Each structure stands twice: as C-alpha cells, then as structure tokens.
Image 1 (tube, rainbow, N blue to C red):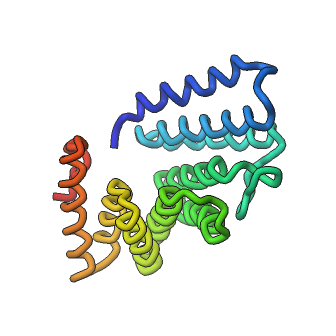
Image 2: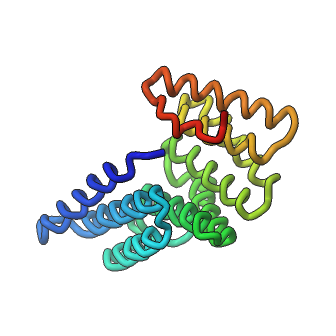
Length: 215
C-alpha cells in the first residue's frame, strides 16, 4: 500500500551494517540477518511492481542462507536444523507473493503451503505471523483458481485477525473473502472491508489507496 521506498532504505542499511561488522558478526546469526534483509528488499521491489528484481533478490537470500550453512527447507525449520522460523517463513511469504505476481500460481501455492506446514507444526508463536501465513495461502489458492480452498483459508485468517485486533490483516482478509465468496458471505465481507477502513482512517491510515477499487 506504499512506503516501499522508505522500507528499502532500512533494509539496505541492515545489509550495510552486517557487511560493515565483518568478522565481528557472529555466524550464522549474521547470515540469517542478511537473508532477512534480502527478503525485505525483495518485498520492497515487489511492492513497486518489479517481480523480476524481487525474484533475483529472493535467489540471493537463498544463497545467503546456504552460505550460512542453514538453508531453509520445507516444513518445521528451527534453530540448529534450518533457518530460524521467522526468516524461513518470510521467505515463503515473499516467494509466494512474487510467484503470484509473476503469473506462476502453482509455484505460489507450493511456497504458501510450505508456510502452512510451519503453521500447523507450531513452529512460531506470533499471532500476526499465523494470520499472515493463512492470508498468503488463501491468496495463492485464489490465484490458482481454487476459490473454495481460498475462502476456507481466508475465513480462518479473517476470524483470527478479528480476534487478535489485527485490523490491517482483517481488512485484507475481508477483501479476499469478498472476492472468493458469493451472496450473503460476500456481502458480509464487503461490509467488514468498509468497517476496517473506518478504523484505519480513525487511526491515521486514511491513504485513499487503501480503498481504491473497493468502494
């Protein structure tokens, strides 16, 4: 929804600090931190519509993880057996999002389901990360032409986001639900899109881009 140029500055600074630390940076901590920054830069490029650059940056992230000796794999990554959960999970998210933008729905589903495997295995405790994982998986299923699966995942994401008070994710899940359901369910989701927008505006998030195409 914007701010990608500002975000890229911070991700770039993170990489510069790691490089500047040289031998003082502990491995594999420094490698995982660099991988996280590469993932952030990929997301920044994707947010500006440049999925080709995002894909190249994600490849660099995987190289960084391999250089650190802890390359992310599918499933339940934990320290000592793979990249830390947050690093691996964000890589799955941005890989899925990039594949969706690039028109590769099955690749998107594969990456999103890898994140779901982590979710089901309880590999991370953050409720925000749980909701975002469900939301990315729902979007991937929708892009792959499976609205039923998308609706089920989006409904879980919407319910969890609402319970946890995560309004931006609730708003995104409601928009997705409105697009993959019909009749009363779609109407209820569309109503919640408007409700979330009201909350976001009240909190200072009144950027008109938030609702472009949804009013």
